Length: 228
Length: 174
Image (tube, rainbow over all chains, first blue to last red):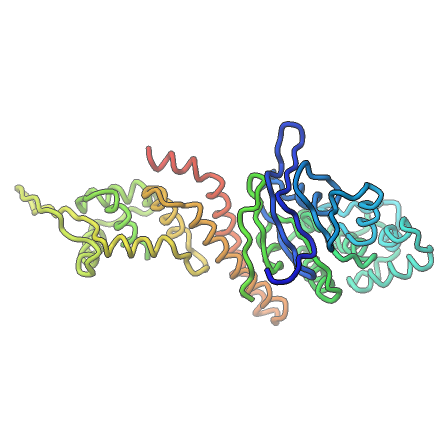
């Protein structure tokens, strides 16, 4: 690669008890790039995502983000990094069922000290960008799976993160809802220049990425660069 | 068309008669569609004409003479090229993909490397179609969807086969 990576892992090893989930993983992600991380269940792809995002600390190896050694940061700084620079979206949106969509989306800003009025205004903007403005007052239980996942995506993007980590973001959706969520995710990421690390076992979802990295038995085995 | 390469791959294991080649083909690759005898001999004839196989011996008996075939250097080179190159990603590839995997295993070549190369070729085509369908009118997007679903099925099969390659190797050598 010619450009400096935005996010990197070098020989990352991570075990859970006797099980070695990552066995010396290397990955480079360029600024604004959308990379799909693929692999069979249990291959270590979600563990890799959590190490890259500073949620898990590797047993060995290095994780770098924007020139900073993430795995060496104290927890408070890693937590701040996750709040300010990283956004997360998971298979099940993990929205708070009691709160309307707009408050779910505003949560990351409210938790980070943004005033309520400003946070709600930013949340409404984020919902509009994802064509979900009409659902601002709806609670998660009143939405379809695809609609709820678009709310979760709005919440992940409301802080305008440098990196979006998406772990099977369409894993519970049918193909039409998957298409809608992925089209929006790619559009917004491209507009904002957001780097995206997308964990998926679905080849159709991976095909939205410019490049794929395959994790097999805790190691990255392939990195295919798009010809386009 | 994979039959000529299948016969070359089988002949690479050792010289053989047409009858035995047909039986080996049916055993390894023709579970649902046995190879007709006529096709065996016509294919061997074309391979001989193209100098990819040669007659290694003729056995005369009461019936028609039996010709024992051997693969030539040209045949091995052609077989290696075919095994190395990913197929153009398109629907209905299962027979040729499966043949390549079995022949790679039989000849102790890396079926893993082949499957990885094929997987990359498939995903690249899926990327192109995904990019196309995002800007295309619905009618074209739906046509792209049709191709994407077929490619996805192939790709899932590639992943499944990659995961079970060692089991298949044992079965092939039984």
